[in-house]
Length: 106
Length: 202
Image (tube, rainbow over the protein chains, first blue to last red):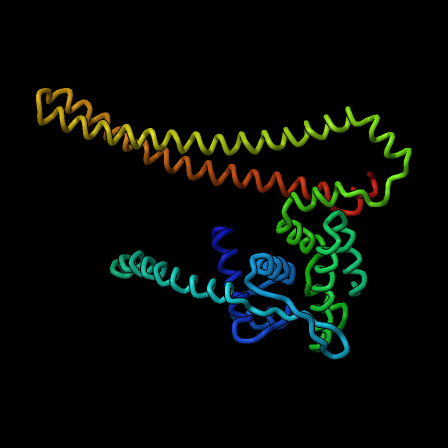
C-alpha cells in the first residue's frame, strides 16, 4: 500500500479510537487490534504527529499510584474523521465501479 | 530484557535528539510496559512485546524533522570557556566556510532534485500544449486551403499526444523516485547525527 495512504488511514484509526472518550497508549493498541495490529513505536509516532497537527491534546491523570497520559480528540481531529468519511464514500463508489466488471466476468 | 534495560538502550540510540523528545518517548514506552504488566504480563514479556530497540529508534527517527536534530546538534552542551571562544573565533574562517560548504552541497542536491522534477513536468506541459496546437491547426488546414499539411499537422499532434501519455507515466515515476531518494538521504543523515556511539566519538 502507498505509504502516504497508509499513514492517513492509521491517523484516522487512532483518532477514531479516542473519538468517544479519552484514551491512553495501551488501550488504543488493544482497541485497534481487531482492525489493525499497531506496534508501540508506530503508535508513538502517530500520536506525536496528530498532536503537532492539533488533532489531539494530551493530559496526565493519576492511575494506580502512577501518572498516565491520556489523549483527547480536538475539533480539528473530529473534522479529519468527517473528511475521511466523505473522501472514502467517493473512493468506495470508484471501487464498486472498478470491481463491477470483475463480477460480471466471473 | 528488563524495563530499565530497554529504556536505557533506547535512550542511548536517541541521544542527539531534542531532550524533550527523548523524555516523551521514554515516558510513553515506560507507561505501555507498566500497563501490560498491570494486565498480567511479566516484566520481560511486556518488554518483549515492544520489539527490538533498533526498530523503535528507527521509527521515531523517521518522524522527527532533520532540521530539529541539526538544531539540537549545534547547541553547545555547556558554557564555553574563554580560550574555547577565542579558538573558535580565530579558526572561524576555516569552520564557517566548511559548514557553509556542507549546507550548500545539501541544498544544491535538493535543488537539483526539485529542478529535475520541475523540468520533467515542464516538458510534459510543452508536449500537451504542442499536441493540442498541432491538432487544432491541423484541423484548420484540413478544412481550409491545404489538406495535406493539415493531415501532417494532425498526425504530428496525435503523435505528441501519445508521447505525452508515456511522458506522464515517466514523470510520475521519476517524481516518486526523487522524493523517495530525498527521504532516504535525510534518514541516513539523521542516523549519522543520532546515537551514543557517534556522540562519544565527537
